[in-house]
Length: 383
Image 1 (cartoon, rainbow, N blue to C red):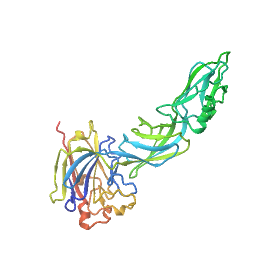
Image 2 (spheres, rainbow, N blue to C red):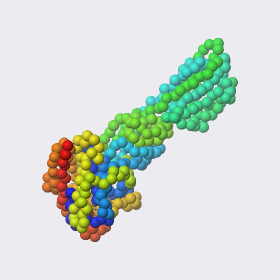
Image 3 (cartoon, rainbow, N blue to C red):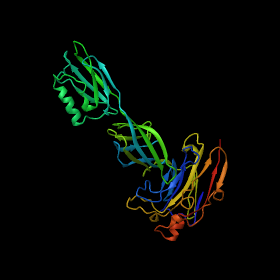
Image 4 (cartoon, rainbow, N blue to C red):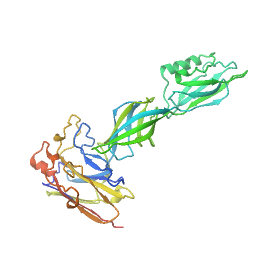
């Protein structure tokens, strides 16, 4: 139950924001105070689910985040997809060093081995030579790999075209334009067909994550592939596709994980009660709808007179909203292992009327309709 200072207004938006990520309150749901990136228009922080009441209807949603490339850099050029994390905020990804893909030689011919000094495009170079170690016309080519590959640059293609003309004696620097060094074979007969397969280049990166709504930044060391266009199983932000070109050491890209404008509906709650002109909202949830093996749940109540998406609106004073605590940031966490009832009076900071977040453009009655004054949560285990 959550109660307001005046009757609930069906035109406004009321949320029970939930974080079921199992970190026992290390992070949790927060209201969106100001722009320019409003996300879903009302909530941010760490949030896995929420219940919305609007226009006489309760609905349970799974919250999603969407990646936004704030600043390209280091070869990072785009970000898309659905991250596995529930934590909104900004990732600053700095390219620390590069592990160039190993060059593996197969077949017999004029090349004894190849070393990759700086080539970041995964793929396969094919070539044929005659007995004197000269290239055979139309035999030299490059095929980019499906993962980590890219088309050759003009200079790189020109180097292959010169060899592909035929009759060119291979030298150690024949593929220097591609960043490869060749070791040549010896012998009376250097004829044959060979392939040089270049593995993907992987960068060692530092990921500095600044959570939305404040809190200490978190720094981790991880990896990022060059010329990537696939969803990451690990790396800075697992689940999303961080599209890269050749990577540049020392440069930084910034990717924001913002609450998505749309979320996934899970249907209506287990039970609910319409306000019918009253000041309170009542909802009953089955915790199994939030996932399995839930150890704890972080909760915040957030209400707002409107959802703001316009990026030109940046001032918190243009937003009329309320959440738990004077600034809306005092979510609370409960373990799910025992029966209990927690009330506003039990909270470390008791929710009271007339919060400082209610200073935006609205009448006093409208502000009171989103001004949280009391709440109660009961956890009951039936099995």
